Length: 450
Image 1 (cartoon, helix red, strand yellow):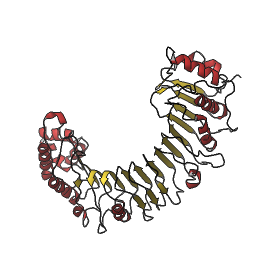
Image 2: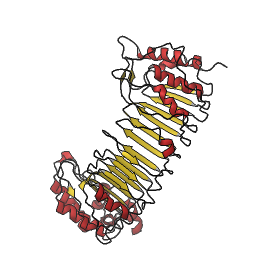
Image 3: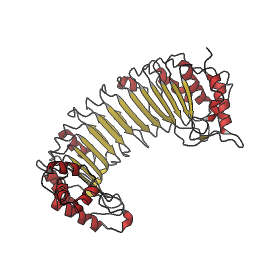
Image 4: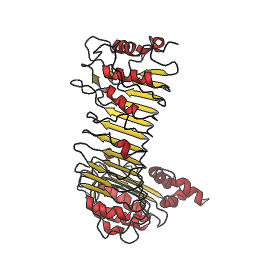
């Protein structure tokens, strides 16, 4: 019976578990054996506006850990935000206790508003660090040395705003032979990231906004998911034989060349591209994404002039014979259309090379507005996707931008001119947002004549 009560009590959030212990002698002892401890201001009832201080935070955590049993702890999470600042000696003491108990997950997020906490590597000596499977550090300094000999069980490593260099990371990665996920964000001391071949199990790599990063060189043979996020500069990336990569996410604030991706990642199945610049060197039909099933592209809208030819993105469709889902997002949240609206003869839209997208079932354009090239792209999808089930035009964030004009009427005119008689009888054309009502009056005329 006691074991059952302990298990039930362990499933409660920490704050509720503490309250239960205050009213029940049965729970008073069982909460001390909880396998997961999450210390933050909310869990401890120390919200920023309640007048409590860092001293209260320290006192409560000290009291809990001194009463804690010496068995059963698996997860230790410590998160300090707002005005709270804990002295290093207390952090060292808490981490020492957690590590000696053989924890599997260590999550430490110190305060970004105070000097960074220097993580004590001495606590990881011997076997203390060998039980850790998940390590997440934020806003601290972490300086691995050549003498570091732990983390043999480490599967997930997440570093956010951590002071660590590429060389220091090079001491850590080779000994983490069980590593499966590596995530680095805002680690600005890293200039060159080298991932050794010994990481046979590494499948997920996520690198975001490491502002001084110049090169990524990976020899890990079994990467399957990649996420890269650059901001102001080009990062030279060498992935070796990335034959197992099936998922790729790219956020680039500068031009990035995608034409080589089909040969580098021949088994790619899901591709997400988020770029506020013109996508350069779009793949041609001679360079195919033979396995790609999901494509999500985010591109800039028109702000000061025509900056993007949306119809050019049809080359991605032509290079993806197995594509099933296509999503296009216009980056600018509120587009004021001043250029390209109905320019040219709508009865003679531009034509792309003849292709039949036999597997494309779902297409969606988020931030749709009646620019000519965007209308041409949507029309192209309707005419060439033989298995299309639904094309969705999301107009939620758009407006026409012309004085005294009704945006719904502008959309209605555009839809009729470009889509009339082109919607297959087996497919749907859905319009979401404030202009959705404009479609109701002309829905039947848009369907292909039988």
